Image 1 (cartoon, rainbow, N blue to C red):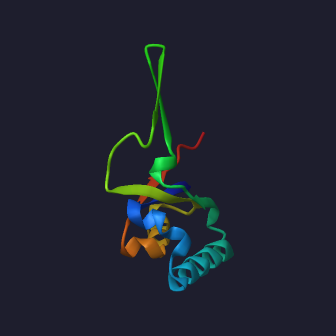
Image 2: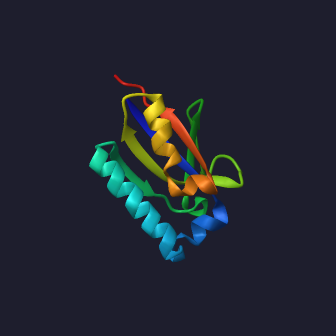
Length: 114
């Protein structure tokens, strides 16, 4: 079963991501190598901060486009990972290994399979 892991981080931490400590970068490299070796990870990328986002809504044929995220929140999605696991238990185990789980929040959401 496939899952999307959405890694929520405090917005100021996203801004500092390029200068993140070597220790955290090394932890992410180790995590990624392990998940690739296990055949679990199928994609993922770091996202730019919410100031770079554009939100689109269509209501009754009217298109509304606005700068920034849809909702104001302290934590924003900063990274996503697409994984494939035997089930929710394995997906949760993978999520606990993400280095940012210690400071942020990891949302594990199953993908509708067609």
